[in-house]
Length: 145
Image (cartoon, rainbow, N blue to C red):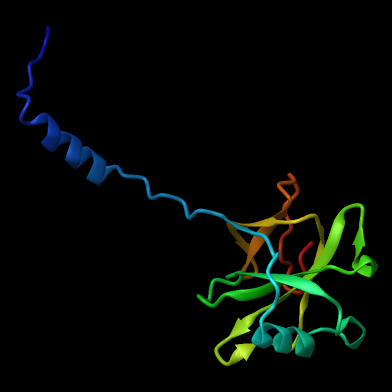
């Protein structure tokens, strides 16, 4: 048995089905490549937040909202051979606050050139995947591991 449906009703039925059964789109993960020279505000924030022996080192920066507060956090990668090896160069994050930046830096593991900020979160911070690797670094409340 064949059922005929008027062609004018098909678009209406499709619209209803799409509205009722739509699956929300996932937030797109963002790729960060810290390759820009830091501006004066970023340099001041980094110099305040870094350990004394890390101050004055060269680094490049990028930004991403790692804790979901709507403020772009400062993400940097050192460029000195003291901080680089076969797995890339180490980096750090300085979280943005309502009044500027946090007073301490969060260390990042070595990476080659970029990382992806994933949708998943642990303890309020987005998970990170470095250089497209399979391993996902998760925030444990004190560090990315």
